[in-house]
Image: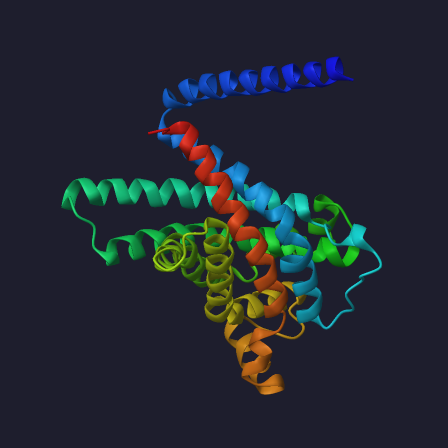
Amino acid sequence: MKLFSVLISCATIYAHAAMHTRTIELQKKLQHIPDYIVNPIIGGVSAAASMFVYTPLGSYCQNRHIQGLPIELKKPHHWWRGYRTIAANNMYVIAIQNAIYRSLITKMNSANHTLASWNTIFAASIAGGVSGPVNSVSQLITLHQQNTGSSIINTINSFPDTYKSLHRGTLPAIYRGMLFANTYINCLPFIKKRINEHCANNAVVVIVSALISAAFATATTQPFQVVITKLHADIEKKQFKGPRDAFRKTISQGGIKALYAGGLYRTIGNILAIPTLNYIQKKLYKLKNPC
């Protein structure tokens, strides 16, 4: 029994040493790769992981609730319908947001030496806005995949104008992207810093900051999300002519409360996704810049 314990201990030490060696080798390789290549990779990996925990509540349950469709709790295999679509999208979205934001910040920093708050807001708004159209397309496809269980190609081919229909909901998606990028890039670090001043427990800081930032993101962007989802569900344009018409009819039918339909599901999804995204990005950037 003692021999077995010794062997287990030796194996554990060896595995830890091997992992440490590989980490150092990976750090050396990453340090020689340009930022414009590393930033999209880090954004993509972290986005795919965060979407795995986000999709069941933040996408599936929210979309079903906004459409007034039953949430199939007894069919968990339906919860991740469209995950590959939304994960692939967010790999691109987070990667582009990271690359654009860091590029703009670097340029403004070199020009001004000190960055004002409006610089970071501007950079985050541009980064979020640019990713809006692609984000809208993926969520449109995902919604119909969740409703039908079809593949990406079959889903698109079922649209009345096939690929022309993919632009539905683009404008509100741009506005939502600008607001959400600012929440994650600017508000989240600010909130964490303030909480850190009163609490030394890192786990508590991460959980509380994720809760506050997720609630803030829902409060500021959910009306756009509801309008986007309604436009996506009405791909044949039988109910809504466009964003303004969807916004007006949503309020007339259910009041301001209707603009926050599905908000609870999205908030919980973001509470799970934001720390995942933040944690993985920090770990990967630490590999790139260990100092």
